[in-house]
Image (cartoon, rainbow, N blue to C red):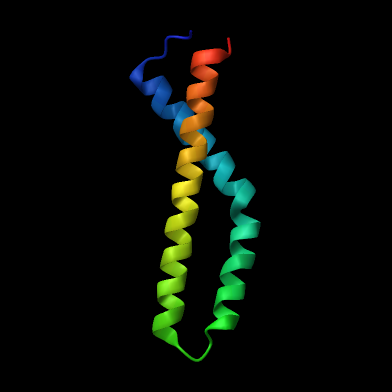
Length: 77
């Protein structure tokens, strides 16, 4: 098992989050565009859908990042 300092772990998580966010940004943009088209007549509904979708995307990316970091730290050399 690798031994990382706190700063190294923070950097590793930040870098991985950045890579995942960049990778998923196009797909996320398409989903946001679709939500905007579906709710054109209702601004409040559109805002709620955007906030919900953004929160779900961030949660998914965070979970994926934590899982990948833990896997790499615990099982890879």
